[in-house]
Image 1 (cartoon, rainbow, N blue to C red):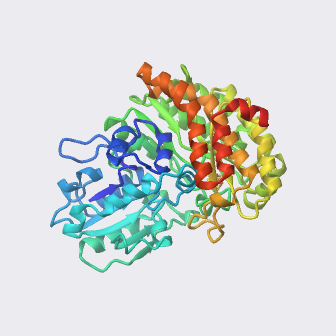
Image 2: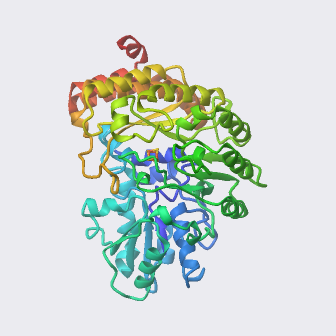
Image 3: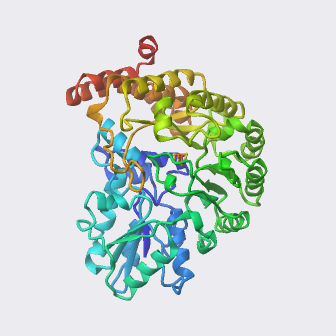
Length: 521
Ligand code: SF4
């Protein structure tokens, strides 16, 4: 039996970026309401199997199917359907999780800023491992996925009744753990299944047999730029051969998805062998065209990109935009746009040099602000509006570093983008894993100003589109637009002012009254 928590077995109404919100606390919202209105279950086949599932889970399914298990041995299902599949003959439940205890970047940041208790990711994971059929029939529990390390770090492995935590995605180690579980052998509590990508043959990774949520298809693994807060930094980049990518695209469309999401740490470096990260335009454009023009593909989304290649090869961006705008997934107002996630992280050249010396290659850390603003200009000129993350609270971050970031945000004022400010979190297997994470209470006034500025931009750029797309009832629209949002900051300000002090009160008040923010800056 393979599954994931309800927040991960959802397409968030066909909106990959809304999955961020599962890092927020539920607050007083009933879980059933959240499941209906935020993360509805994926489509199911009549027999109850999930039609779509997280990409990593589909890979584990394929590993098992190519190594002695049959389609009738392995089931992939939504947690709401576990009662149909877990019984006395179920040997093992494999769970994939990105964020089982809410220690991911978004969860750590927004559950402390907004409050509302445990992040939805953590609540749903708990519900999954405590499912009545798991308690009753006691199959072995194996947890893998990008966030599995959290169980060990938070010492929740035993508490949740997990028999084995898998870290990494190497097929031989994963298959071995499942074989042991099925044969009734003792499982190691912890399996390191890390891929050492330096000499890794992608051919050992089986092709997915069934479609993933959002039509996810991996095009490259790892990155190699060596940002010290990041896990993919530990891996050199490996490109998936185009032929294999197209085989998964074909399978995805065959199984009913007309969307394809290209999973990568950086689309622009697909096919590049350059040690200074100079893109290979022909390889990237050829990949984009092959996927976008594949029969049955109506929209294509790219998961991640970096900014230096944009400046290095603006012609590549132009050619990619001409392809992707025909297969656009998002819009701003009525205008089709292209987007992908990227990391700005900071405006401080000192922080860049210290922790992210490879991120701006082939340029220099001192040029970072210029790279970001030039890249945003080129991207926006081509209807490409990035979703950008920024990190506050990196170890040894000083006030002047934050002021540099504020200066960069000022320079970005005229561009269209969505900004996600995050607290530094020491992820497992990154260089900074033993450093202290940023905490809400330690945020200075400048850090709060930075947080506010990011969300002030977001509200200004995206509020009308969000309201038009999500709120169809005209009365509700007017209420939210004219009453709720203007009052939100005041109410939150009072609440947080009472709970956490003057700084937060000021923060939320300023956020919902942009005219005050304008004056303040
Ligand atoms: S560029 Fe992005 S993916 Fe690569 S190491 Fe840095 S943060 Fe990680």
